[in-house]
Amino acid sequence: MTPVLLAAASASIEGRQLVTAAAYLAASFLFIYGIVSLTHPDRARRGNTMAALGMLLAVAGTLVVQGLSYEWIAGGILLGSIIGVPMGLKIPMTKMPERIALSHAFGGLAVALVGVIYYIHESGFAAHGEVDRFHMGAVGFEVLMGAITFTGSLMAFGKLQGFLPGKPTVFPMQNAITFVALLSAAAMVVFLVARPASISIGVADTVFYITLGVAFVLGVLLVLPIGGADMPVVICLLNSYAGLAASASGFALDNKVLIICGALDGGSGFILAMVMSKAMNRSFANVLFGAFGSDAGPAKSATGGKAANVNEASVEDASELLKNAGSLIVVPGYGMAVAQAQHAVREIASLLEKNGARVRYAIHPVAGRMPGHMNVLLAEANVPYDQLYDLDQINDDFVNTDVVLVVGANDVVNPAAKTSPGSPIFGMPVFNCEQSKAVIVLKRSMNPGFAGIENELFVHPRTMMVFGDAKQTLQKVASELKSASGH
Amino acid sequence: MTEPILSGLFVFMLAAFMGYAVISKVPALLHTPLMSFTNAISGISLVASLVAAGSDWGLAARILGVVAVTAATINVVGGFLITDRMLKMFRKKPGAK
Image (cartoon, rainbow over all chains, first blue to last red; front, side, top):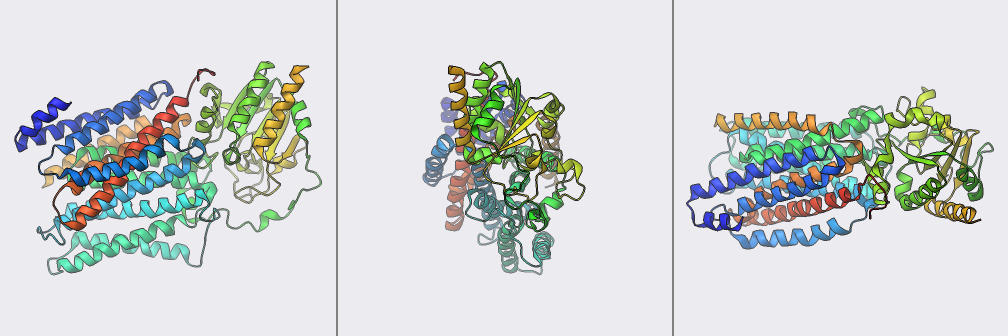
């Protein structure tokens, strides 16, 4: 690579452009290779490395562009690496949703700023003449989406991290205000695109910056009313917005590699968002504007505290049941991530496997706070991935299973989704836990889950509730199992 | 002027179709790495930020450009590292730590 760069440095401007274009072409190939590799777990890691190489080529190919002053660039790259490298190496897997939300914020910010700079350079202060309509449209869309993604992702991050209340924040006329803001932002972009010659650049500049400001507010407005349990969909949509913004910047700058990466990112986010909302049996509109989980009024009716028919069990009871189980399905939920109980789950699974039991894990698409959240946590705990099953793959097997262990999951195991048409989650595909021979539910307390809905599984005759911190409970069960096998 | 628009739209259309076909085949198992991977590659906006920060387009553009370079670098560097860390953990057989 270096000799190529050195040769290019002395070459003509045309030669440099050729080097840049070749680097972008190679990068595009490597990115596509990377995403194709992600379809299989055994090849995925290599694909990621290849894509990183592609990024390196693209950056190197950009740096040979004539007339760039490197000291500013170096400062930015250095600062970004100082923040990015420790984040990449140290962040715990349980914090992955937070880190993904934050990275969407950075992505949105970078793209929005590139749009603003392009606007300044091409139109405003520099007065290079006028931006043509197509490019103005691309820049307008880019800045709008980028700014929405930035503040929206910061809100999502705040909710995940607990800075902001996880429950939906609602105020009167909220949806109306959001729609008006959205429409006015769109109208301002249309105005900038269609701007008649009689409107001065000064006015256009003002409208542009107002659009930017409205977009920042819109990001906040769009994410505020969305509850924590709906975060998987929101994170996917923000992912999609970030990608579309990047793609728009590719149109603004006539840069194909940006268009390609943006399309891949935007498409991926959109597909994941569809998977997520399908797994909740809800539409995008319902997720975005439904303020789900805010109205917990009727939910707290029957069993506010520990009701009489809850079968509360001790660690010893649970251990006894597990010891004799020939087959076990673990259903993890967000509570497993909160309690960081994945390693304890794995320990119990290993002990039971030594007893000859078959252990599998049932992963609901919306378990946790982002797509694939549970898979990553269990992989971290060294669970082999062929024991992780999707909803469709495993749901018919509950009927033949001795024990189901529910670790911090709630809505995804609620039979009300199948049986009571009045329930807010009715129609959502859920696990058939109640069909198994016995169910152990690990739960902090009898409080209803995020959606604030009663769960019949918890009062089912074959269900054993073990209250307390999931990690501590599981560790106690593990030592019970060990002492039992020691005899 | 129409040529770059049209070729841009062609590229977008092809990338979107290919992306849809391929990404639909990514197993749910790898959805989190998929997100962090696509996030890392969309950090390609770094190249646009580099041009903005490195060109002499005035102080405002310079400062915003450096902020954009920083933000995009965080995503690129962090994104590929985290994706690698996650993918390293997915194993078929237990024990090989």
